[in-house]
Length: 435
Ligand code: NMX
Ligand code: MLT
Image (cartoon, rainbow, N blue to C red):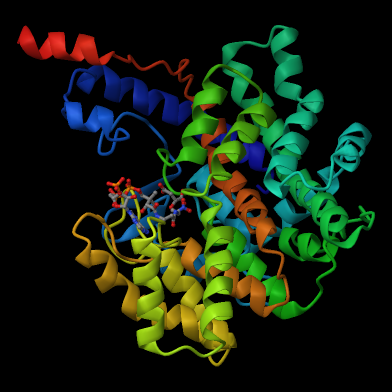
């Protein structure tokens, strides 16, 4: 009952049948309308994708298989010595729809540690990259290079049937999740410490513990923070840039390594995952200018200056959310519990008070509230992980959990190649004229 693939097997046939029946009965049901503004406006509000693992509510935030973040924090298994949820648990939940038992997550920790073996050529390639290549670009390259190991690609070449796609995808996803901390650690140790990575993982420990250890952190506080971090960033329904990119590229039957590296290239953008780096760069400049303990008015002035100079305030705003991101709240609660007097946390908390009214006053920003990236760097800084251009790599390791669970389901449900229709402005004008 711990073998995840067997658990999944029992679910796939039932789900295929449920969707087949649903489509037969309601396939012609109209879900919404598309306006010209939506087409020019980043497809905001167009319901055009099926993505099973999580769903975002504008006001309430994300639900993972129906569970809110506080509910997940409550019910997901913890490490024997910890009280934060284990990311293994959220993977089990997203993939199967069931809340895992302690035994399930221990099985998963062991399974990932057994599969952790980075191919020699990937290590060599990462070692040969110039040091000024951004960690996210290195991450993308490292993941794509692992494609040489793809069981999915090999299976396709050898003629696997469509019904077998998801099983081969599952194998690649499990190998990739096992190896992501290794890829990240090789980049970190080389980039910041000029050190080779000791690739040994402890098969009796969890994924986050091993990841922390690989980059030289064994403070139990850091490990607990990492467990929470890797759980919180895992998934945000299907339309965000990283999830959508993985879904799109995977739909061409590119293997999971290639599909995931495409998603990570998207996560590396400053309006998406790189915002966690941008927040810290911006906070560092704030501290340089105003000192460690600036006043509310000074912080408000800094936000106004940022807007006046035509820059975005990183960590604020969202394409879908219209309230404070519950992932922000969860990190705030962690900070409040462990380091309420940390000066950087205090600055971030003051920002939460003064920035929204300033953003709101512009009249154009749809959501003046903080998102997940407004807080994550503070947690890292407190525990001494100060290298801010590595922060998006942590986000990426976590995001793998959700987007790769969804990728397995896309293959299990036999979803076709994604190919929406595009139009030129002339063709659109013609359409309006002839209507
Ligand atoms: N600071 C300044 N201007 C902003 C901000 C902000 N934080 N958020 C939105 N705007 C502007 C936006 O640039 C646009 O301006 P213009 O019409 O001149 O082009 C206008 O407000 C309307 O944008 P919205 O419809 O509110 O936002 P949209 O859905 O287009 O974009 C984000 C969403 C998240 C890209 C945007 O809010 C942003 O750039 N935020 C800062 C970067 C950030 O924190 N990104 C991380 C998102 C979470 N993640 O991890 O992916
Ligand atoms: C995410 O976690 O992917 C971001 O909040 C962006 C989004 O949902 O659009």
